Image 1 (cartoon, rainbow, N blue to C red):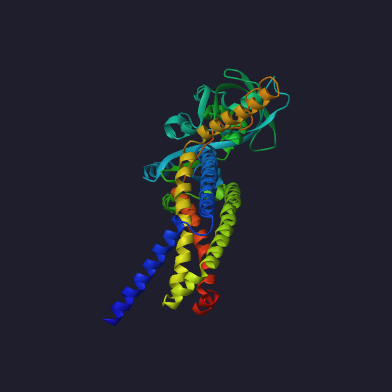
Image 2: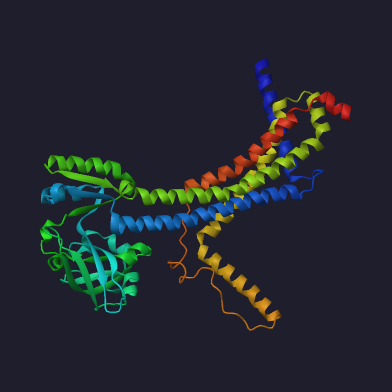
Amino acid sequence: MIERTGTHAVAGEARLAIVSALRRVVGRTRSHPATTFLATAGIASGVTALLVVLAVMNGLQLGSIEDILAVSSYHLRLSVASGGRLPAAVARSILASPTVSALVPFTDIQALAGSQRASAPLPVQLRILPAGIDRLDQDFLRHVEIVAGSADLAVPGTLLIGAELARQLGVGVAEEVELTTLASGGPLEARDAVMRVVGVFRTGYFPLDVGWAFSGPTTMALLDGAPAQRALTYGVKLVNRFADQAAHTELEGMLRSGGVGFEIESWRSYNSAFFGALRVEKLLLALLVSLIFVVVSFSILQALRRRVVERTEEIGLLRAFGARRWSVQLAFVVEGASMGVVGSVAGTLVGLLLAGDVAAVLATVEVVVNAIIGVAQWLRGVPAPTQRLIFSPAAFYLAEVPSRSLIAEVALVAALAVAVPSLAGALAARRAAGVEPAEALRAE
């Protein structure tokens, strides 16, 4: 019975401390109410800025990663020992796996591309794909957007090139491109071939659009005197690219049972340097934006410390009437955490709203900036300036700003926005817990 009473007493004291802290947040204190408002607004602005930055970074990075995996890298790359070919039975068993969506044999050739309009030849990664690539790999044309011509590579000597490569070479559909390659096998020998552009593609990822071209298997005889000696690689696309380790193990079993010597490389290791650089870039940018929380936390800490000084007599009386130290501390922790919760919720809502349509936000900013510049020019009597674009496709190789918000990142930012003010409240609470009843009453 005594134990139950003691438990109820502790719970009641905790509830009293929490209610008292919340009343002080929404009510008036001797401090100016702008202190609480500005601290909460600082948390909200930090959450908004961080969510928008992360969403844009995710859009840019995930778009590039998906283009690389769909067009050039594949999820798994399979090479048969000694440049051999995959047995038909093994290829069928791989395609029959529910984890595999496509199996594409290809050959990569380094080449130089030139034209009559180009001042100098340009380096090109030429990939020889099988006929009917649109049927073998339906994901390919979802990322390789045909902006002119077609992707029909069945005719010998046809070429599908990137939009930026076509622009720099000054060629279009049905025009000729001169390719220079090195023949495989035997002594090194340069071979020249005149190819006809059958289509122009755009992925939105500049390195692919400026440095890649595709052709069909019938073109190999024009480019290489011994095409059979060219190493053949098999690109494997998975239903879920994050299940690459399980698929790797499954393919190993199929190949061993088929008596095939092989080498398998996952997209993680094949692109590890590039993806690692993207992670570092995103992490550093997020850390820089997160400094907003550090600055706001110092503001909250100083505000709560002032409130400890203002309420020294009140704390002393509470301690004299039996309030425990932890209940006094809890009141200030809840006071700081409540600012974080309000700021986190408001900032998350605004951040997700802005991240959902970054293009509209930029368009609005452009209108406002151009209006301000126009008014300034009118007051000076200067003719109206031309419209300025904050985000211009001429300066950025993007049709629009991509944006993707990830649930895990949103939850992490929201939790951080609550944790930082709570920590500031805990530091201020240590000072409040140190107030002795006799000292407070003597000061009174």
